[in-house]
Length: 377
Image 1: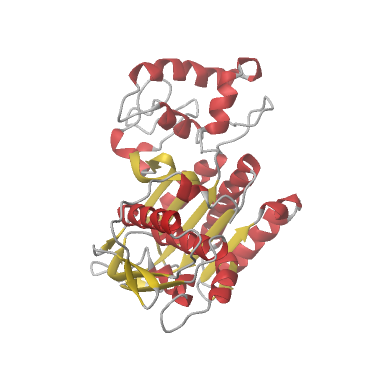
Image 2 (image 1 turned 45 degrees about the horizontal axis):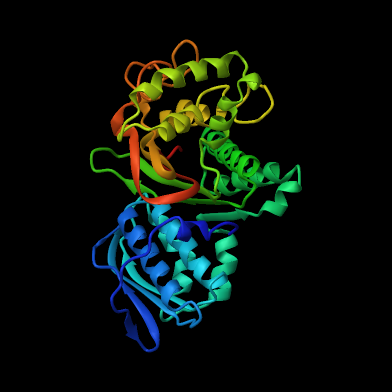
């Protein structure tokens, strides 16, 4: 993927005194049962150390992850990106071994291209093909490359593909519309503002039954990410500095910034402010003085979470991130989302528990969207 090298150069290397070797391969062995952001940080540090020491010697790398519990979809997708970078850019052979219990929010691991890097099944060419694009059974994957974005009908075609894919699982029209619109909105924003590739990954799980009810549920798990030096709030922060370009709503945003900056600290930063500003209705980072923008999250809040029995949704950008929790996402009468109990974005800080201090620096923007929905007859 374009700019995927930023994931390595924006994070530190691991101090490794001596690399473990087995059959002429450098071995990474995960020493914990949880595969989460901390594990990804450790893997990136290891890869950076290998590249520094063995830059000219293209020794293969074997990732031995053991028996693991994967925390969410975004975690293993980022690991896929690391493996793809090693294969395509670093020209190293890569093998991966692990065993993971499939849960409703991580069942997509069963369709991951990582399985094509196993010790018994090893096909780097098919990995590359599957990493870029796959519509097969319960898995939809599409890497939209920068050059494709010149096609004005591209996003409409992808939206149609997504709708057709979801129909296969008898996902009702109201769900399909909400899911496809959110994905296209977020992917479109990434393509427009960052001029880089955008990865979309969607899986629909097998039906699950809950002990306390006879209803059947299924999971819809979505990851959307891009690698770019421009973070989520970059465009809006640049626009706010250009006071001549501001309309009335953006002027209120500038007033809010003046209030909020007095309370910036280690828990709530300027970066957090601009991230939250990115999701406000009719707030856009485009240079034109216009009143559109911020509609993707509107649809996500008012539709998908209302339909969902459970959900786990967040965004990562740079070192920071933001949880989307229904109780703190209500609009006030003026159409602002406070990310707090007061529903007050303009004068009140967001709820601290919604702010994420990431394990890694995410160069670009990455969404993890998990929904558990009741199966409709």
